[in-house]
Each structure stands twice: as C-alpha cells, then as structure tokens.
Length: 513
Image 1 (cartoon, helix red, strand yellow):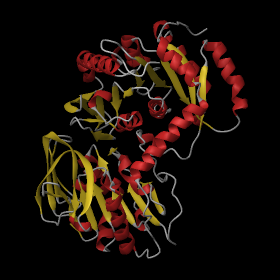
Image 2 (cartoon, one colour; image 1 turned 135 degrees about the vertical axis):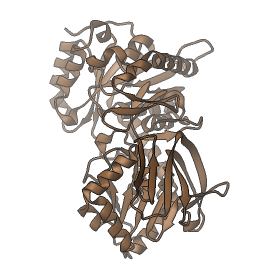
Image 3 (cartoon, helix red, strand yellow; image 1 turned 60 degrees about the vertical axis):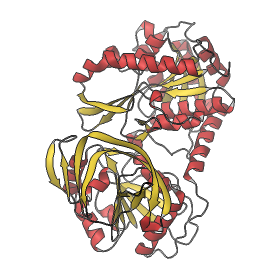
Image 4 (cartoon, helix red, strand yellow; image 1 turned 30 degrees about the horizontal axis):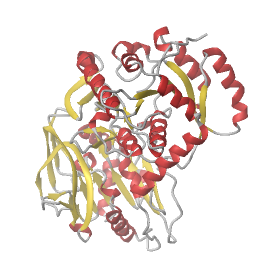
C-alpha cells in the first residue's frame, strides 16, 4: 500500500459499520488509524454524519464529534471539520441541532431533516473525495446500524455512503451484549442485494473467554453469509477514555478504572448524569488521577458523601435545570454550598448555577431562575461561541490553563470573582466560596490546574490523607489508550486481509446464502 496519494489519485477507503450503536465502530476505526499511522501510512478518519452531544472545537473553528477528534489524534492529525462534516446534537427526543462543516445551521426533527438530505449528501461526498485525494487511506465510521432499513433512503453514513463512494464494508458486533452471531447475520440479511455486495466481513468486539469456543459459530457464520470474520478483539478494562456514546454514561457506574491513592485517602466525585448531558468526557481527567473515584449519579442521596460534585454540560439547559429541581438534586446542591462543600459547574452546568437564564434559542424559554449559587445572569444568542482558549486561573495561583468553548449562552452580568482569565485578560467563570463555574470544556485536562484544584477539594473536604500524583498527564494517558487500541487490532485482527479489502475495494460481490 502506497504511503501517500499522488496528485489526481484517489486513496483507498473502508467503512466500518456496526450492528448497533456502541458496538465498537469508533474504537476499531481509531485502532486501525493508529496502526496504519505507526506503519507510516498517510491515513485520516471520516464520519459522514454523527449524532452526539460530545463534541470538540477544531483548529479550523468548527465543532465535530469527540470520537472523530480522538481518531484524528490516532492518525497524528489535528481535529478538522473535514473528518465529520455533519453533526446532529439532540436537544430533545424529537429535535436536534444540525451542524454542517462545523457550524450550526438549523434545528431539525426526524420529519423535516429529509429536506436537507440532498444538500448534505453533496457535502459528504465532496469531503470524502477531498480526503481520499489527500490521504492514502480513509477509514470511515458508520452511524448506528446499517440495518435500519426504514431510514435507508435518507442514509448518509452507512450503506448510502458505501454505495455512493463504492466503499467496502466491515461490520463490527459487540459480543458482550449477547446474540452477536444473530446480529451479524441479521444485519446482512435485511440489506438489499446491492448493499449486501459491499459487505466483506466481520469483526467481533469485547470477547471474554476461550476463542476456541467461538470458532464453530464463526465457521457457521461464514457458511451462512459467505463472509469471513477478520478478528475477535478481546474485552479490555483499560479502554475507557473519550467515550462518545451516552450508553456508556450509566448512573451509579464508575468512570474509568480508579488507581490506588498515593496517600491514605480517596477523593469521591459525584458527576450528575443530566438527561441531555453533553461533553461527558470532561470528568475523565479527574478519573485519570490515582485515588480519585468518579461516579455518575442521578439522585440526591449520592451527593451527600461526595467530596466534589460536578454539574456537567447539557444540550438542554432549561429543561435539565427543571429536572434538577424535580429530582431534588438542585436542593442538594444548595445544601452542599451552605456547608462550604465543593461544587463545580461546566458550560450548561455553570449556567444553571447562576441567578437567571434567558433562552429564546434552544428551549424558547423567556426567562427562568437559576439555582443561584453564583452571581451572574445568562442570555442565549443565535450565534454559538466556538473557540479554543488559553489563559490562567487567578483562583489557583495564576496557573496556566487551556480548553475550548461551545455554547449559545453569554454571561450578561456577573458579580463573582473570576475563576479564569483569557490570554488577553478578559475574565471567565465564577468563584463564590466552595462553588466554581466556567464555560470552558477540557479545563480539567490542564494537569497543573487539576492538581491544585484537587488539593483545594481535599482541603475543604477534610481529606488530609489525600495526595495528588505529580506524574499524571492526561494527554499521555490518551496516547497510551490509542496505542493499546492499535495493539489490540494488530494482535487480534487479520490486518493483512483488511488491508487487502481496502486495496481492492468492492471488486468481489457476495450475497447471503
């Protein structure tokens, strides 16, 4: 396989589809990307259309799904809107914000989304063609399942993309859920003969146990479908960072794999699992720290014993604020603040902690009262703030900080001390006693800031035995995760066979027998 596409040439490409959401598409794409990059192949990721509230700001000033930013890092590339040209950010069960080439352009429902399909199809085709001209290989990720045949006519990311761009397809299934052989067979079986012809084989994800016990089933699957299984990737407890799907954000479940504390005591963090939670990965930086146990929670009693409560971002600030009140979580936050116990709000969570929110953009709510733990007012504007930011934290010895902003809400009046300052000196965020807040995502990934912040939490919580580990580096841990993914693919997937599929494209045609 050539290392780079030449002028006028088109690089090879592959679509990784999945039997379900959270089947392992994102991680398999990232693993293949890192593996190829380590071999010196010029490779890029691509997801035509994503539906996720976990997003990041790119260097070219737009926003894309978090998974595509992770896949870009696997390739050794900076995140770009090219890698995820269409992003849907759900704000309710029926509507989503439509982001095209990194910019919000409309609010859409399942019914009126079809009005955009022709224009979006052209955007997707142009971006994929451009990537294939610039890179030797493009590894594409599907969305949901290609077996959603009721949506086939408007599909941009699965078989619709594969057909339009003549992409060979590998289907990945999660055996941890059970029924994976039926999922794989059924996914192919319900497709049209034209779509079936593009399916080249399968990969099974999250296998536990003796592979020899699975072997007869894989032989029968190949006999039934005429397609091989290229690999069985084992379950790994060490893979947990940069989770994209909300299915991984389960109430009362731990975040990551907490390492033993450096000192004699743990810090316990309760992260509130909002109904329309966004950028769940903000708390992952805390979970990287030895002795810090992070757990998603949905009811007030879980806040009682926590040393720190995190109120994360949301795509539906007013609606999720109402949910906080109905569940009693808002009252529990007020009680914590009254006793001087630490709370931090991030983006939408920060906005909820203020005095008032005026939102005529996302919710159509003229004005609602905030929880009132911080002294500021928020008004939503039509244009979204999208920015990668750097600065310092005057609250924590002016330590250097970095992050990114994605929000419609603006602070229009503030009375608190700032938590942060931009590099140009502008104030950002709020500090009032034990309650902090900021619009900045990714702030806790700033290692020096996070260490000082955790020492402050430990002091207020009376955890004298907690010690911060000096060597924890979130960027390095993320790189380790990508290398682990590549190792899992290298050791458990027939990579040469997959590369052969990429090189020869859709030359072979097979249907379900």
